[in-house]
Length: 337
Image 1 (cartoon, rainbow, N blue to C red):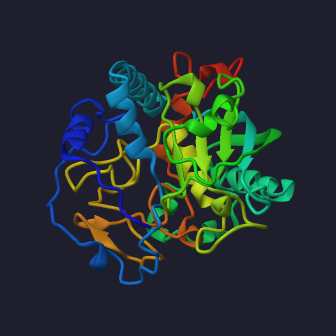
Image 2: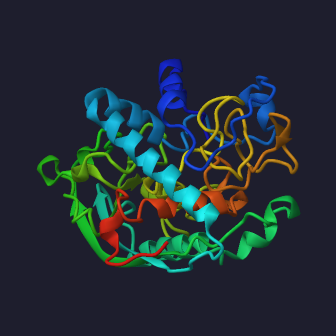
């Protein structure tokens, strides 16, 4: 996986207004720089591969729509209040949130026109990963077992839409989300998670849109060879974790390293600070910023087979978007997160 470069201006912007959603780690730890080559000596990812294009997409959207900054700031304020409320509760409520899911398959050839079985395999991975029922959860190190959790979020396949296209690649400018461009229009994003499966191009595995952005483009996009676990899939991204990662963004999670260095975090209390993504299958323990990196978290860049967990703090952050006043509260009629 290729590290996505975030401009200094944008990192500074995040640091200013996307402050802790859960009284996040504010102590600045010792900073140091580690090159991609030394970060993971078992890095066998081709140079052309980019694990996630989400932060670059967000940067582009912020430039095109200055109002998005204020909406995201309001969402962060709401999230912070929600997480603080959860910390003050004696009982953790366990209601499961159901997410109807629409999968748009926009294909140029038969390989890209993935089977229903491949789609169902991805929905199964989402449900296992978000409920901690994934069979590889037993690989979470003892150090992190106390925070590994079931998020109580469940995905139900609502429909599969297939669109044949003469277009070979779609890029990250959301063209695939409009029938007028030869793609497929979003289906009621107030009630459905929309997933577009198409060849993005540029070596990009997937990208997502954060809560608060344009409803007409709300959802995630994943290239077909990294979607699901069977059929047209390519190792080492053949276990459905690209979609798990991108849905995490759709639910307001940041990358585990906070898209900065040791001075920036992901606005979650129980994930350690880090200075950048991990690649391949890192050796445990991997130490960054004077602490053990949570390289097996779904929001890092590790290979699919080496991702195993979300944390309690990430769960609270995700569930905040469904609470009263949250950007995705319309997904539920009555919710007590």
